[in-house]
Structures are given as C-alpha cells and as structure tokens.
Image 1 (spheres, helix red, strand yellow):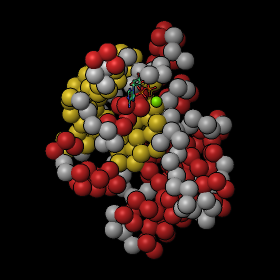
Image 2 (spheres, protein in one colour):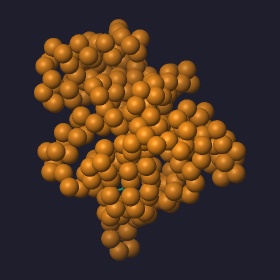
Image 3 (cartoon, protein in one colour):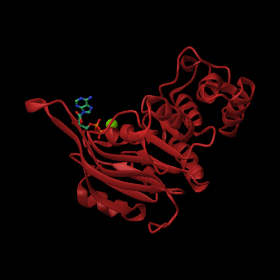
Length: 246
Ligand code: ADP
Ligand code: MG
C-alpha cells in the first residue's frame, strides 16, 4: 500500500505520552507520539532498546493506559470505554502477538487459539474448528493437540500468531514476533502478517531486523520515546545505515 493511502485509519495515536514513576525516578517511556495506521498497512517500529517500542504497542492495544494523549481504534477513543467494553474491543478487534508468545501452558494449541473466540461467545465447536483450520493453513496441523511445552519455539510463535489472527481482527500488533525464530520461519511469519494486512487489517510490528522491516509499508524509528523518522521501507536500509541502528 502506498504511503499516501486514503483507506480509513484503524489505529490513531495522538500526542501519546507514558511516564513511569515520579520525581527522580521518572521515566518518559513515550514523549508525544503521533501515528496513524490505515487498513491495509503494515508498519514496522524500530529503535534501540529502551526507546519505547513495547510501550507504544501495549498502549495501542489497550493493555496499558497513556499518561496523556489518545489511542483511537476504529474511530473509538479507548479512554471513553468501560473496562468491559475495552476487553470486548481487544478480543474482537485487536490481535496481539507477545514477544514471549504468552500461550497458556495448560491448554493445547487449538484450545489456546479458540479461547478468545469462546470468551467472545462463539460456540466451542465453531471456535475449535476455526483453530484447526488456522493451524492447517499454517502447515501446523500436527500440533493441534499439543501443549506449549511439546512444541518448538517456532511452532509456539506461529500458534501465538494464529491466535492473534483468528476471527476478524482489524488491528494486529506484534512485538518482535520473529525474535527467536530461524530466518526461514521468520519470513513465513512476516508473510502471514503481510497477507493479513493485504486483506484489510492494519498491522504494527516491532522488529530489529531490516530484512523483516522490508515487508512493511513504512518504518517508524523511535528514540528516547519520540518518533525520529518515518520512511518507506524501501528507503529503510540507507536510513538505518545513517542512523547507525542495527
Ligand atoms: P523498548 O521496547 O523499545 O525496549 P520499552 O517500551 O520497554 O522499550 O521501555 C521504554 C522505557 O520505559 C525504558 O526506559 C524502560 O526502562 C521504561 N519502562 C518500561 N516499562 C516500565 C515500567 N513498568 N516501570 C518503569 N519504567 C518502565
Ligand atoms: Mg521491547
């Protein structure tokens, strides 16, 4: 999707700040970030460790609350929602891929994927069927009945991604989704995110790897809690070299 896309915004961050602690212990994790991600776009977020990437993602997903500024998902300022409404929005509209997978150890792969759908009132039978289909679509049919500790890291990560993508999630947020993966599995994960965005979702992905950022339409660079640059991903290689980022 071109940078000048006019598709409707799925995610808008407006003057977003997040401050932890007070006085001498005060940390400005985000200092006034503005970002709009439209349907069909995949945005990569890059920047040094501690620059605020995970904070940006948790705020965008409604998992943490901004100090000031707004998070608007599909036109709704999430600060105006009750806790119950926010939980429902997160289950229905937001897919979140955590850096450390966050699969529930006592549930099988299929059960992990089906859980948010079941919580949302979809029948167990339908949710399990969706989960099996998602896994076979990712060539992971063999792990359907396996528990997380019976899967490799790459398999767990893909199950976590299936859990984030199942249903009709319009916003997909992924924090270093390729962290522990070999490059072939990492590329497969990016291809999945890309396909979902091409089908109309908006995606934001934190990554350290320029080769994964190259799948994105835009790259946003954070430093000390501020956006220091935005670029088309095709230009990212030269910008990265200039920034001295890895
Ligand atoms: P990144 O993901 O880019 O490595 P983070 O968003 O995790 O960065 O953190 C940004 C800054 O906020 C860091 O300085 C970090 O130490 C600080 N920070 C994050 N979470 C907390 C917290 N719960 N309490 C205090 N400081 C925090
Ligand atoms: Mg982080």
